[in-house]
Image (cartoon, rainbow, N blue to C red; front, side, top):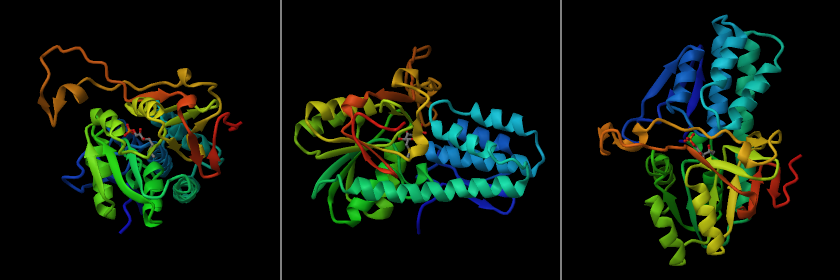
Length: 322
Ligand code: MRU
């Protein structure tokens, strides 16, 4: 059965709590936009496109409850700052003139359906770039859990695998929240794609040993010049791939492109609480009062990116998004 991070059910939004995966598959039942805002902020749902879809459904819950539209919109916008898909989805909901459950829900469902369709197109375009017998390195979770289904970077891996092109996947653990180890590993096992999880710090060694042919990652925001914000550690992989002359590809729907920003230095980068680093499963491992810097994302400069794949095709520098 296909994996999905959320589904609408009559009057509520059901959401698979990604904080508990893979140990527990627990579905949350959300009935207010405030609960959706908390679920995004606390990362019960995460991944740029999935955040956008969830926020759209949050607005449907607000309309259903007859809540103030502007307050709900602003509240959801405040949940996480980096993934532009959140703002893109809320902007789309804002174009719906009628503040009714029926109309807002229909738009949220359209956003979800379109994201799924975009992912399948990205996967087709992206799979063409994958060499035969490829050993692919990826980071974070960019799969069904991070989107309306199939995934972006992981969607390319899925499709290329069904085409017989993928020999092996290496999935970065993705410290500090371990989206790679917990979520991507879960999805790869589900699809029976051969892989190894690696510590993020093993990537250089893996590449130096000649065991990586292709690197693919997702995106949270792509600026007009092609600079790309994605999970912290992505820039490191791009820099390594450049050194080892390995193609480094970004995959994202056009809802991830922010043409209003000229370059990546303008992207707001979320910094999260220090406990993500100082604690493991709630157990403190760092000394008390240990100072921590914990950015959730970094920006990979466009000149380290071999290609950006969207549902519209494969783009290379200079990026003509505008
Ligand atoms: O902090 P997260 O888990 O929301 O970060 C997710 C990522 O960085 C993904 O790579 C990105 O959102 C693309 S998901 C298709």
